[in-house]
Amino acid sequence: HVKKSNDYSYHSYSSSNGFSSFTSHFLEEEMRAAIAREEFELHYQPKVGTTGKLLGGEALIRWNHPKFGRVSPGEFIPFAEENHLINEIGDWVIQTVCRQLGEWRDKGFALYPISINISPMRFMKKGLVELIEKNLDTFQIPAELIVLEITESTLLKNEKVVIKTLEKLGKLGIKIAIDDFGTGYASLTYLKEFQADILKIDQSFIRNLGNNRQKDNAIVSSICHMGKALGMTVVAEGVEEQEQLELLAEFFCDEIQGYLFSKPLPAAGFEKVLGDGRLQSGK
Ligand code: C2E
Ligand code: MG
Ligand code: MG
Ligand code: MG
Image (cartoon, rainbow, N blue to C red; front, side, top):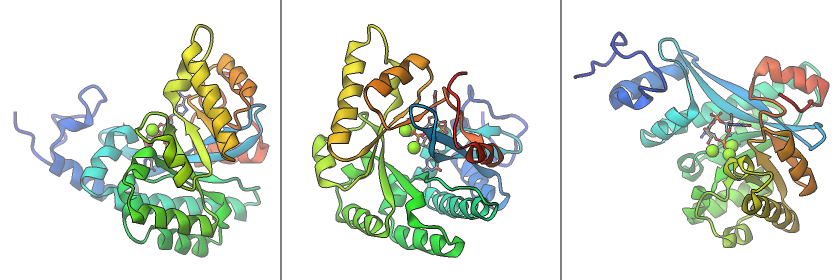
């Protein structure tokens, strides 16, 4: 049947009916309004060393819609990329992280680098570096506290603008992480040609670590080894089990991110972690 925009009554959001059951026009308008209505929120997931020492965090966007409830970024980010609203949302994320870091500093917390996910489209658009510089300046944040997570698909664009932007960011002192490493189509050539500082091993490899998973063990230990040989910091994401942590420690993986230590936390929760400087493993 026909969906009317601005009529929530027949279509309460649930992940089973899916975000896509709304008309794209309706969703676009809702997303546009969401920034003004302050429905977006950032959560922060801690990254720790294998012994639980806090090393940083990743900013992950949440959309708290008054009627749909919590919409996951996996559902609305791809759509936002289609309708180009990702640029506006991305700019909001950069500003919010810088403002948040300033707030934590003003409260007297020791600061740790925060990673920001940058979609391929936003990365290619002009003005990214300038926008980041402006926000660093406004909130008086050192560039070393910002990490940009890009995916292999951004590198695949293989355009001059990508190389130029990476160079400018490097000069500023902003670190680059390759997110979801191993799932895209990027060849090892990209690791040689692009200046990236951090490799994040995709969760799909981490999930299968352990006994009788010889292939995944071999892949993860090899990525750890290769990343370190290239002078990169290696991060494992999606770590949920103690056994996975033990293997990653054996592989000398630098940083651990996953539910075993902590889910993504609202700013107030992450603030507690900042105060403690460490986390315990265990669910
Ligand atoms: P990602 O950047 O690879 O982020 C990691 C995702 O894994 C997050 O999902 C996080 O909550 C989840 N995760 C972390 N540890 C575990 C674990 O132990 N087990 C499981 N099952 N999951 C874990 P989330 O927050 O739903 O974000 C999904 C994706 O949406 C992100 O993947 C990223 O690609 C995108 N995203 C999130 N926030 C932003 C943003 O601000 N801008 C852009 N452009 N994309 C974003
Ligand atoms: Mg990420
Ligand atoms: Mg990832
Ligand atoms: Mg991902």
